[in-house]
Image (cartoon, rainbow, N blue to C red; front, side, top):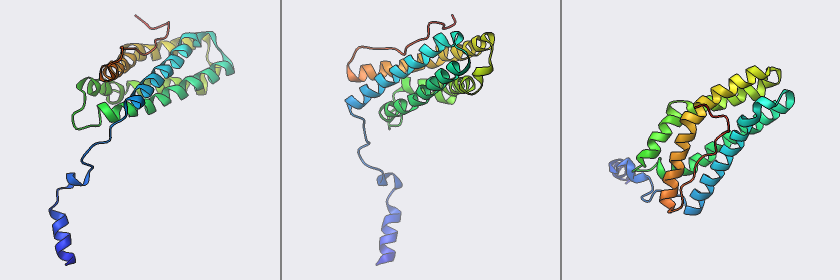
Length: 174
């Protein structure tokens, strides 16, 4: 009898072991995640806007705060990914945005730059701080934030809400 049960279970396709109805985030959870992600972009942008005016421990503390918020963005992204990316029929705009953020390493580049400022920025000159912020902003303003905007646009369309954007620093390079 045991052998028959084993044989029977071996004939069942493995995809049937997965839930038949994928878990989907509630509209409230999606909206909350998107708005929290937007707020986190604002904290990071505020830091990048003012970093060159900071020095010493004030710089490293502000950089650490920005880094914490940048890392927190991944939590909010995961909520949106659960609805728009990690599903049977992902939203193609989100697939493309995710490719820029994750596969191209742009998000990691921002994290690495903020980590550098948080760990070593106290010893940097104003020119070194400005140079590091410029490098971060070249990546963040041109690649990361537009990709986050795509996530927000897809979320807004899905929720039938007005579109909104990631918050930019006031020193984005042209």
